[in-house]
Image (cartoon, rainbow, N blue to C red; front, side, top):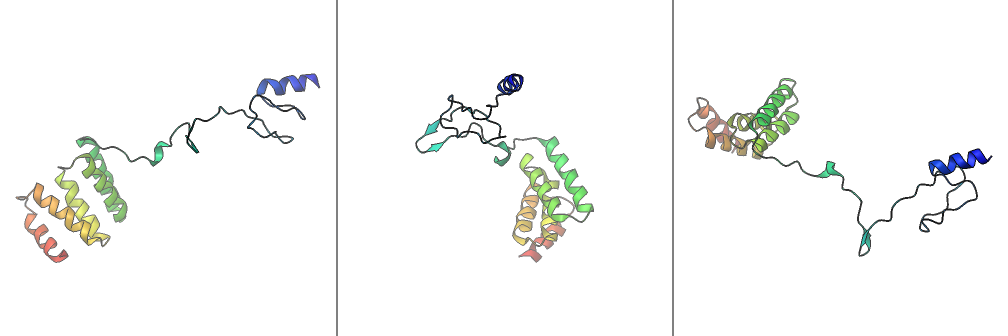
Length: 150
């Protein structure tokens, strides 16, 4: 019996019937439940400040990175070949965030947005493409598409 109590004390579990006085805010453990002591949280006003912030909800910061932009275009091309135009549009949009001057990404974004019937986004993407590459060999075709989308 004493070995069991010693083992439980070493791993931080209060034996049955014993209550920890270290943290009076913690309710007593029910039988068979582990008693974990948590450090007190700092409070500012009425709400407690969480000890750390979940980084998954933060938006990714984009700086100029042409390699990442090209990688996103290639991934978008993969999705476009599979017929998943919405996923392709997200990747092309990501490519434009990494490199705003990537005319290829803007052109492909316009085509993908056109496939998913998002006319306004397709118009914006084509317009940006024509700003970046006004003398491209397919510029006349893109201008015709742009006229049809209006």
